[in-house]
Image 1 (cartoon, rainbow, N blue to C red):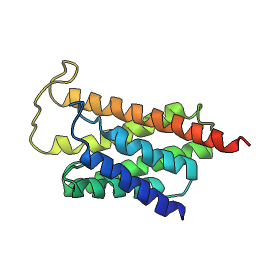
Image 2 (image 1 turned 180 degrees about the vertical axis):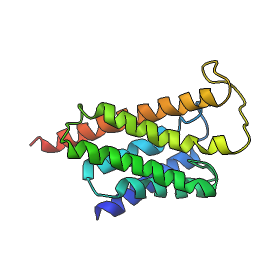
Image 3 (image 1 turned 45 degrees about the horizontal axis):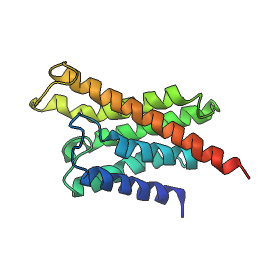
Image 4 (image 1 turned 135 degrees about the vertical axis):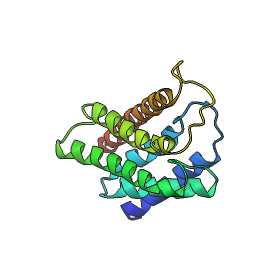
Length: 172
């Protein structure tokens, strides 16, 4: 199977998981783990240029068919494109610097953080409908912090998973 097609399939499955999972944590941005981890891991393991962007867009489109939105309504799909580009740049930099997976953990965390914060931006454009505060921080600040924490965690998980997969491949 071509690598880009694999990224589309994995992104679509991530979008399916995102679309059918119903808010178990009630924290803003927590579903980033469901789409950032698979998309970033596939990009890291297979190294196919563009698979981060294509996987993120596939996840967003499939999630929308199930009534969920990664970055808000359809008009904010370019934010998902930018989030995929952030994931793409993360791996490109790590591979360009020839970093091992454990040395790339901070970079992966930053890439996940940027990707999820980009998906938060749509909340700043429309009317603010905060039902609760996050960590006793009311308004957009608490939500931004929550999105940032889950993005950071997603990047760390993806880098560790990719390192595990790549390490398992090298052993006879």
